[in-house]
Image (cartoon, rainbow, N blue to C red; front, side, top):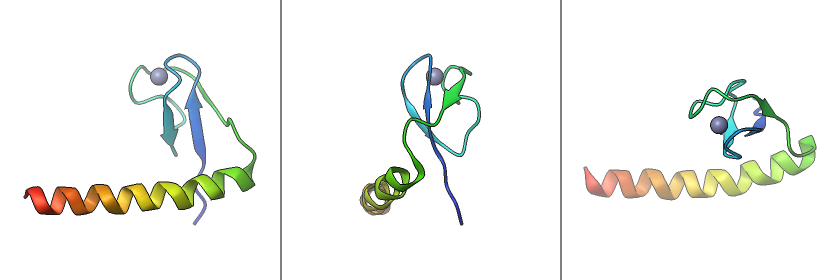
Length: 59
Ligand SMILES: [Zn+2]
């Protein structure tokens, strides 16, 4: 499974696997080389797990 991290040219927000920014429909680009993206993904999954945990506690 490969994931690509993109960054929006318009609002500078990061997006994952979206070729168009879901927030402003702006153009996105790959801000980092693939290796960095993998490192980021590791960190991101940590946050995502935390977010899921929080969501679980709330519901
Ligand atoms: Zn945007």
